[in-house]
Length: 193
Image 1 (cartoon, helix red, strand yellow):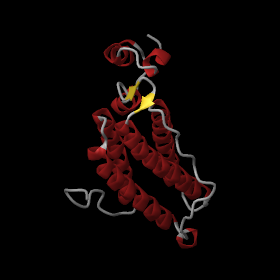
Image 2 (cartoon, rainbow, N blue to C red; image 1 turned 30 degrees about the horizontal axis):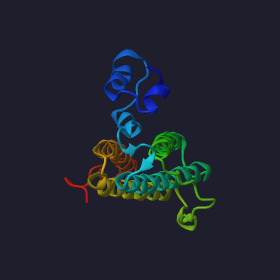
Image 3 (spheres, rainbow, N blue to C red; image 1 turned 30 degrees about the vertical axis):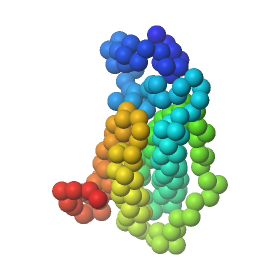
Image 4 (spheres, rainbow, N blue to C red; image 1 turned 90 degrees about the vertical axis):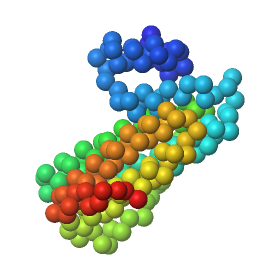
């Protein structure tokens, strides 16, 4: 089975075995769940549940594109020292992976992925130090955690819920690492709200 067969909705169980068991290609469970999109479209017609899921995915995609732009701003600010700059670029790369997968999934579900804005409004006048940039990034990551936490239970396709939960975990790790870099408790409470 080829990758294109997988994306076109060929036997899902066979395709999962193909990716996980036989190939050297390592895709996360989130990637597999997002790209599955099995049985969500009926004979080329978007169902109401697929339309709802596409709206949620596009909201997540918009937030990922904003995060990519924010990390670019931080990287180009000249305020980040080498180890922190490397961290920002790594996190930006992970947001790019999320955005790419979300975009492909929206398309697979019959939707049109949102595009990045031409210009984002960030509080650049308040970003004077490395810590200011870290706090701004941490605020965005915390917002992403909250957004994915809200999205998980409302997907009609439960595979999409699992995938969103996986991305939520990555965003939570970003937030914890940024808090640690600021000298704050990386996990400030036992529950996320």
